[in-house]
Image (tube, rainbow, N blue to C red):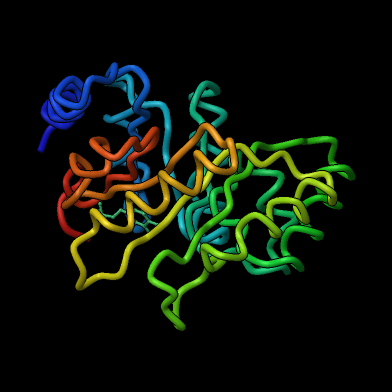
Length: 214
Ligand SMILES: *Cc1c(COP(=O)(O)O)cnc(C)c1O
């Protein structure tokens, strides 16, 4: 799909659920896409991107950000603690805060670099063992921990289990964010972003539908 087609679908889904499309950020998930694929999207006005791996992001984004200083880069993958320093330097938002040790390291590094990035807590809505994220029932306690550490937590993100209908997971994340008084909800990918918007997503992360298959 073209960028315009996706934006149109976002607009329709937002309108149908009584929302304004301007409240939904389209994040282009650019993992495994090289700069030649990314540049034309930026030229068309796309300015929020997400990457999964610090090392891969470091290979393409420092140059792209020099070229296009308005682009915002979100970390949307598992963040290893030995990559925290580089992540704080390169990214503008960290969406995947998912354990105490990482929260502490991020807070310390942000102070050191004086770069206080907005962060999201990743919630493991399906309580899948192989997946990162905080179980929903521990979210409140973890939010307090993060804030006591000095992190600026502004939202929640989730990746629903692959073989389940996502709607229940989106509903759960939306309820949790409301309960915790967090404004941002990062949920929905290529195959389910319209559903996510109906449940209140403020950020949809789209890769395949935008770039084609990886
Ligand atoms: C790759 C990725 C996406 C985009 O997935 P698509 O199905 O290609 O749209 C979204 N979120 C995360 C965390 C991802 O790793």
